Image (cartoon, rainbow, N blue to C red; front, side, top):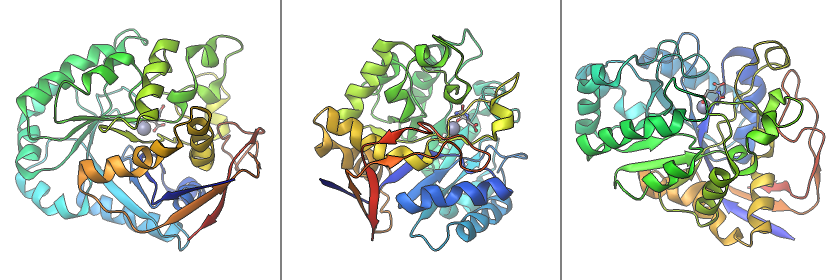
Length: 332
Ligand code: NCD
Ligand code: ZN
């Protein structure tokens, strides 16, 4: 049995820098035609110069693969001149509330203080991607942030706003309320709940921000993905950390899913008799929403089985040591 995807796009990816970047980039550049590269490096990617240098490193690391790294600036107050100069090189700007997640210390303290930048982004048609969590109780952080999404969607009706890695039913429901509000969802939030993270022995390799939520939340996300809800896009949020930063006291947030995204997605959509919707979910929706055409790349998966390595160097992958039903068999 065979299943083919045309130009899959990962709309939310962490590649890091240096040796880690060189190690993990090919795992995405092999299977995907393009990916949005998150800018939460140390220091953050918050200038055009740094962004272009980072893109060059990624292009060198992608090993000849057909792969378009779509670059993001780290949100700060930008001048119109800076945004005009950056516009043709960036896909969007990623906003982190200060301290919300890995390497977000330089993020925004209060949304009300940066409104001029939102207005400029709307004027110049630069998409805004947001890590939407408050500093409240961990299970409520995303829900508490929804009012901020509503405020921005209303105040800047021409600004394309993406709610990144949504994890709740409430966020899914908000998608239908504002024409300019979109979302990405990860693979793992379609698969796991908080029980998988902390219901038994603590599983550091399933710990991420936002934390996995309740069964009814996962169900709402899954139903939206299986229907390829027209405003929902696949974004893995694959976020590698070395094993020493995961298996320790003070575990870093992030799952490393890059090597298994497509096989697990195909299995999941097959189980729910929704394979006909997967193309839109992993590519079509993103192309239509952002008016972006990825490079041509045909990825064929076969039901030959794939044993996931327990480790890729210093990184432990999602489903490590398990055998998956599908495997990427051919890329052209
Ligand atoms: C991400 C990381 O490690 O960079 N971690 C995570 O848990 N998802 C950052 C992020 O997207 O929140
Ligand atoms: Zn992320």
